[in-house]
Length: 598
Ligand SMILES: [Zn+2]
Image 1 (cartoon, rainbow, N blue to C red):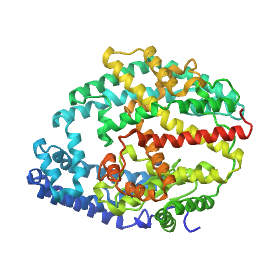
Image 2: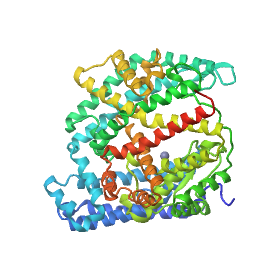
Image 3: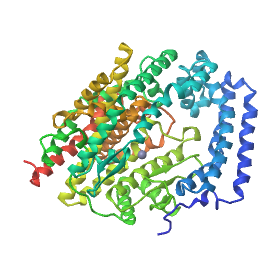
């Protein structure tokens, strides 16, 4: 095996490479050449021909330099390989400070374009010379519609920590400090921090998960009064902000920043909640497999069966390569290049960052994938997932300019889950029946959490904002009641809304990011809908590739429309849901065949 760590020579030879300082000088020169040229000019805000010239230069700057050049990316990657190295941290901080200054000095450019008067905007959008920048400008215009004056925006910014962020940090900080004596997997009693207590609630051992749940409930209950005050404050703050900006619904700011139409999110919510029978049937199956009449609230994620098969890194690559080749040669070629160029950091090491990610920065810089491969089935899926992101980057890189390099949050997880699912199907195909049942149950559990639970959470948030708007203050009891109502709506009768679970909103961080959670459901369902079409018609992969190449060049809605797909239509989302339902039916069928249920 040639490389098992990143070959960073695509950027610099070493941490001491003399080219680092030289390149930084160039970044500074290029940045201020742009800033000094355009800061004093206003012609580009009236005449589209001049804006085209400005954007061409800006695009070039974003392609090759940005505010930190190769140095920022290089040291960011290096610190993730060696998190406890103070020399690296220092180098990274220096380039960050350097970059911050340029970012501040160049932000006038976005702000001024955004402020082009509404009656002139159409002229810019329709100007043929600006065609490749059209959506970039459209997005700036869309956000500026709800911006206040510059001094007002400044006040909003300065007050935001004390009116929002500090409140949220306070609650999560109180929870993080908690510890309780509970029973570990090894059967020993001892003090454990909150985060570990939360994960031990999924233990297969009843005594472990039950003591963990008791401790968890005790902790959230202890802080529920504080959380009540916190959540009422941030809801009030959000309502004031929305009114000042003239936003017509509480989730509109989220939709605009994610480049997704409210109409699409509404269709997604309706289509998914019309099928809450699917998660409900899943939990009934799980309860029967685990031989209980009802799962308690904290038991719904307990794993069924064991998945002990090992997959070495080499085996994983081989398996994924085969799946990619079957889908499309382009995907296999990209994987091959990643391997040849040393774009993976494979195994866990002391000091290396945990989890996994796929990093990209400037369009001119290579993708790097970080893994912590330990030969488990989940590691294969993680590799496939990150490769999905990697393939997405490479396809966008080939066709788009640097201003369109990226994905909106609403579709960011489409490529990753697409690849992950096809790889999982290959694994399932080869597994024996018992292993297959365990894997399918694991998968369904993830899909129920990603699609149905997040949609239920979004609907809880909608009602929370709505009730707050009407009443002006919500007690912990009222919030708890709403919460349980929405959790019960997707879990069905086989999961108990156990005493104590009415307080679990205290710990759900995402409801504080307001309406973020739909993006989990939209990403996975778009991916599944595309999978459904590819399975029926393999040539459909051409459309998938086109979608994956489009980046930020248009809204997801328009990108799909050009491919002949209407994502405002219920049918599109139902195709995705159909995939989950098929998996559920196959799983039930297999459980019956194996005599696990009757
Ligand atoms: Zn991802």
